[in-house]
Amino acid sequence: MRIFCLCNNWLGWQALRWLRQQNDAIVGLAIHPAARAKYAEQIRAEVPDDCPVFDGSTLTEPRVVKEIQNLGAGLAVSVLFGYVLRAEFVRLFPKGCINLHPALLPHNRGAFPNVWSIVSKTPAGVTLHYIDEGIDTGDIIAQQEVPVEVTDTGASLYGKLETASLELFKEHWPSIRAGNCSRTPQLVGTGSSHRARDVKEIDEIDLQKNYRAEDLINILRARTFPPHPGAYFVHGGRKIYLRLDLAEEEFNEESLKDKSKVARK
Image (tube, rainbow, N blue to C red):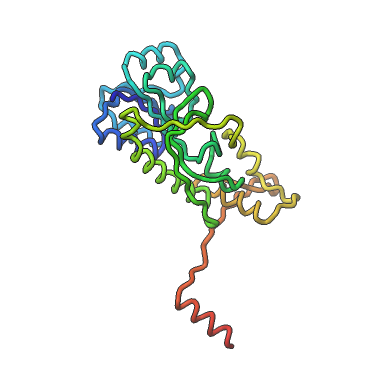
């Protein structure tokens, strides 16, 4: 199998690393330009020195498309790649392009699915799917739901989605590689979709607005993801950022005894 990979972030690095361990031929790699890249050096280090590496922002340029076509890759694998892949690019690969998305499609297509699963209470999960002309709208290969706990923040849920995504990818790669994986079309008009800028609509907490307590807590915990600033309110012309630290009460034999003593007094 000759594979063209498009990777970003820790999950992209780990998926590429695992593919290399399977002795598949990575014949080309696309990464984000420096301003948008995460784990770029680790990702680069997973491919041989003679493997061509492309700037992900240039994939619509005819010269770049031709160079990638000449690599003869049969399949493309996209993991947290932040650029929309056009139809002419997808058609370069006879076995298609697959994407690993940290959401339970059709819920939360697009950006920040970890945020919207908390704020909008949509199911969270991970999905392997084929790429078509839409954004996260292609046929589903496999998916796994991930529970959202009341103590989850945007950061903790994202970590759970990363782990589940990698396991889903490993589990179903053999069938993808063999060309006999399942394909389930997504129903048109179902689910939800978000752009990266949509979080700006929830980030500013209006001190004069009435919020349901649960809704406000969900916004704050969804946007708790250090070192990112997250939600804020404005005071004296300055943004004051907010983060939640959630901890569940521990129930054990000793704590129950202590409560019993208090109750008897």
